[in-house]
Image (cartoon, rainbow, N blue to C red; front, side, top):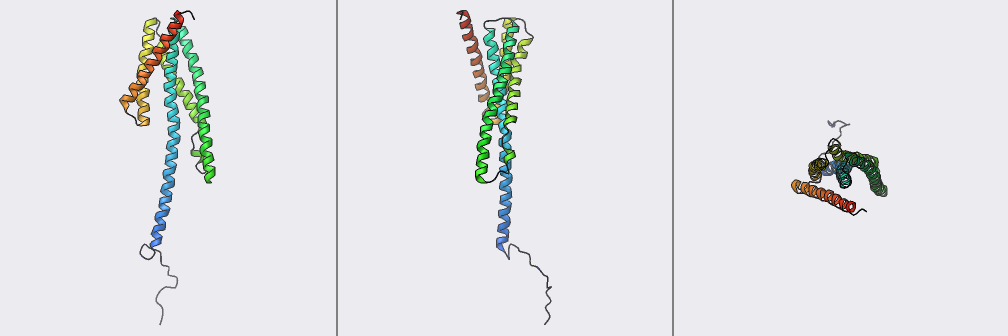
Length: 219
């Protein structure tokens, strides 16, 4: 009797005839999703690294330069001296932040790369935090923050008014940086902003007071 079934007929696997087929598909899809999730996590970590450096750098530039200018202003009332001190603080601080961030992120880079090499998978090497990117971001952010008190003092001739303007613009900037840091870190907005603001006031007041004391003592 003739066989009516085509000789080249191929039966494709299905979930009913071959249950392991669907299981293998699920495993492959799971591996793809896992790789995509891992890539997204690394991308976020890389982005968070330079964002953190930028926020910290801007806040540091703002507060350290303002405190330096307030300290110099405690013993020298002319605007030129305050501005020169602020510019020196901007340049020195930006260089210091850039070098410090470069060394710090390079250490993290070496540790994570060594871990990848031990695991035998360096395919995500290009997704590791970039030390030079973090360094440049930190330096630019520091300089940006330092420009706030400098611009506040640059166009005010009266001594007391100049000090008041510096404190005012720095206070506003501190609240903004505190809020931004809270948003990035998912922390309470009001509490974080107030913490940064009060800390900034304390730093400026302490620098001004101690410098004034040393100046009055003739040290």
